[in-house]
Image (cartoon, rainbow, N blue to C red):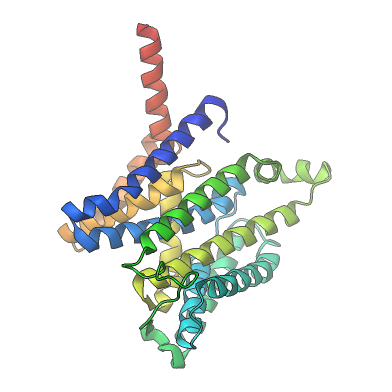
Length: 326
């Protein structure tokens, strides 16, 4: 993991990205309007989910192909609660956390008894199970999804409404998740998790329960993704099974790989760039993924550690040249 000078640089980069995101509402007054604000909110929500997934892929070495199921679960718990008349945002958030943690604990306890391609397939199976379960909820729109005609309140305010401060709630959540996962990665828990990724037998011989550490990581990642689903439901004011589809899980994996697995800012950068490229290319080409695929391959081949690793490498080269001239 990052340490020393590199860690400080990465922290500065992440902080700079968060500050830049905070300036979006001012920029939207000049260019883009509410569309720009909504697009950036969506990118930040995806970044939250991608950061959660990187706990599994980058730090634990577990490639989950059903991570979007937690996003869909959080969105559906939110949508159903609001539809049934519960409008207290904190109460709904508590339900989202409990539901996500319970689903992660059960499915994780089963999935983590496998490894490699078997783990990928069983997480995909659980994700698809939830996807079809959402589509079967006829009273909540079925395959068509459901529109949320109102959103919940936060401490009696409209902070969770698109025009009432939702942007700042999403940004604050992203900052908290980014900071929390960054601290988690350098903690004792994170070090054991990464060691188990490289040498699980040796870690087990040292007296650590690899299964228990991985299960806790799986639950933490599921809960964070569920919170992303909670925010997504408020941002889109619409909930559908598509939020839990395996294609969305694939997109999240791409964001992690594109940004840089196991890096502090990789998932954040990956989500922002992924959505930006998707929107730009989709306006230019119908088959935009045919262009995006080769771009992703180039990043993987030539940028060590994804975009974050490439930026760190470029900064180190620049510092070396400056010091050499001095």
